[in-house]
Image (cartoon, rainbow, N blue to C red; front, side):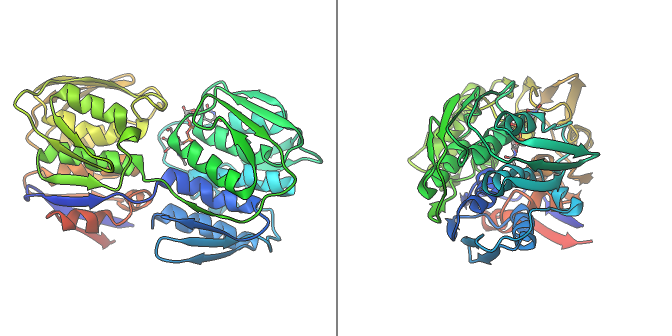
Length: 417
Ligand code: UD1
């Protein structure tokens, strides 16, 4: 267990560099299973979820070599197709081993995945996709045994454009016989990053990044190199911070186009957004207005930025509204924001935030990853000291967050408890 301690109201200025995307890296690492020899992945963020995936690969018999921000993975000696309950439950992305092991070895045994508790988060769409390709699924409590004599391409319509299901079905389909079409596929940039990696290995995937992905099965895939795209959620979190500071905080090494839905909200709020090729600086303007934000799948406003944008809305005079449409339990940070001085009302899946807020430091808890990031932002502007308990959740998704914030002048430290 860890806690983050922040003494707020320090002058923040300088540059923050964005790391590789958590949600891409978490799919690219299991994708290595599909190649018959060594793959190299660059710009891998140093976050604890990557440690968990490396542990899974190691248990399966793969060789993982970790450099500064590079992972070399050799899966040619994989000898186990079973993932224990403990490690399946450590993170959500363990589910990518279902598709990857099924795709390569036609067999996998693992347990229901873990991850932030922000809703029920079923995996029915993943399983339906595997079945459509010819896999048999045996469910025993929370244990899944998935196997196939042969995988055969099919047309698969996703009832919801799920990121995880889209990627997992791609994994199972790349070496299936014939053509697979995923309709109503997720369009997040991470999907294209994964498809490019698979195509570099020799897969035949078109349409990634659109709602219709076509995959023509190939006999085998070979090792190659790839690079993780910048993390648009980490970037978005720091862009919100840049807005809260209102000047002199530049967020760099990002792809501004991936943040369009956030930037549009910043314009609506009345901020000036200075976006260059790979950086964004946000400046306060004289007129600020409250806004309505509704989370949607990409290219809509990301659910993963719903919590981090809340402290900014708390600063704005008037009542803003935030509606969460993807997860049913993603307001666990709200009581803590209220303890920090916020005027926030929860009504069903919507919160109404009335600002401006005078943030005050207190003891709060990071109930999940993005809730933690939200509390860090609020604490940076609070009078006095804020202690964020269960800060280990934050380290699952933000590389070197403490050092990055210290570098721009924050008084922040992390301690083991
Ligand atoms: C991924 C991201 C997560 C992000 C989310 C939405 C990873 C490791 N995690 O999660 O950070 O918040 O996308 O952008 O990449 N659903 C079903 N059945 C399924 C799968 C999903 O009903 O089989 C529902 C979920 O309950 C949820 C919605 O679809 O309401 C979104 O889920 P999905 O896109 O799959 O998110 P994850 O892949 O879990």
